[in-house]
Length: 620
Image (cartoon, helix red, strand yellow):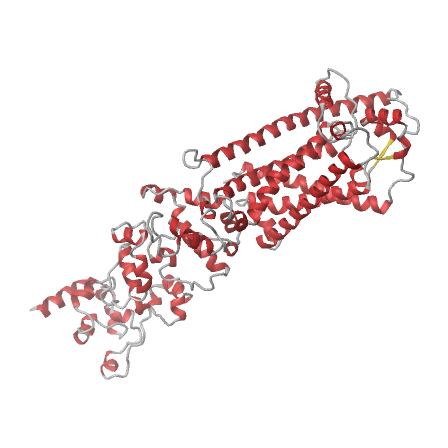
């Protein structure tokens, strides 16, 4: 009776397709599955096969090499491996390139229940059970983890084996230091944890992704160099992912020294105080980072607001003044007559010129290699980083330029000491020298000069005459000292984290990252906009003031721009000490002017890229 019911059940499943293929069957191109099951009932029962996903197919749909039943019955036609590719082309193509295929693990190795196989309907527990048949060691770790426990409880959002390793296109993990493996360690985690909808319905925050992407590790990953930095799995492991308060978790405070030490040898308990996912916008949980960010943002906005307004006012007033001078010349009115107007005087010596060249080279190098990291999400950042040959080479260039920066800063300190305490040609004691007319330190005169310039901007008075140094030049000089404390100090911390982590708490590196990043943005934005205008872009100097490259200025320019300095030198009778007998050579001027124009164009190009990045959310 049971045999009859089995045949009736199976017949119902096969009736329609067999009727449609009756003609083909009569020609020997198909064999009735009922016939096959009469002999192969030990392989699968009629009920199981009928209920399986393949139940509506004929046996010869897979065993295509059986075309003659009589030949098969006498052993002349025996079935070879089933041809899964005939129906499952995508899956077969993926499997063909997988590590399973390379190790002769065929479809049937996983789908060994092929005759009674049922559709898994997205139940990850079924897939995990399949993987477990071979990968029991990994399962022992995984099933205890937060992911494994959630899947076992029926949460189909939680990560199962195939979420990371794929179902069929399973790649070899490979060398733990190569690009593919390093990229894999982070990409598969982001697939889920960057999905806002999935995380929201599981009450999991996405701050881990956003803060990782804001970090040096995440930015290097985003730029295409994951092999140089830590990925998600390096800190959280691949399978043994537990809540951080679980003693088994790699991120548990008791285990952090070992976890961090894998990449940072010599890591200390202080070092592990680093906020791996510290959010500077979270005032409640990360107040130090929040107020550091607020302070730096306030500094940036304040400096740019003041100096950009100053620049715009000067730009317009200088433009009007140039038109007034031109109109006077057309009327035949000379501005004023200066005897020997084009006699050349020395403003800067060779050491000054050399140090300024070091400033230009180091600053451009730092900007070109640092800004791609700052704006890592931008397409131009990846292009720039690839131009340098990768993040590693860019890092070497960045550090080399940092060394040059320390060199010229050291020279500035030595020169300042020499100016205050050693030189015999400058009158007065150190205090008098510090606040004197030859000093780059601000004094009361600068307040009058600033007020005078704004009166001139607003057409309320004449343009001030300046001493040796203007207030904006003094600001540039003092910015070097502030910059070395902020950018240089934080940069050294980030360059040698293991050393500084020996006596500073780890969160100091979070603070250093914010300061280094924002102060660098302030420096590049200021130099390439305000400083470039004050030096080269103002109407009376456009397109370039070449004095810093050859140290020369003619008498007319000297009196026009540094009238009070000229008067002082005349009263002291020392003007002739600064006369240059002949101008710099043609080849020298050509090379240095070319270099200067390249530097200015490069800086302005970076300004355009920064503006583009801000307009397209480049800081996120």
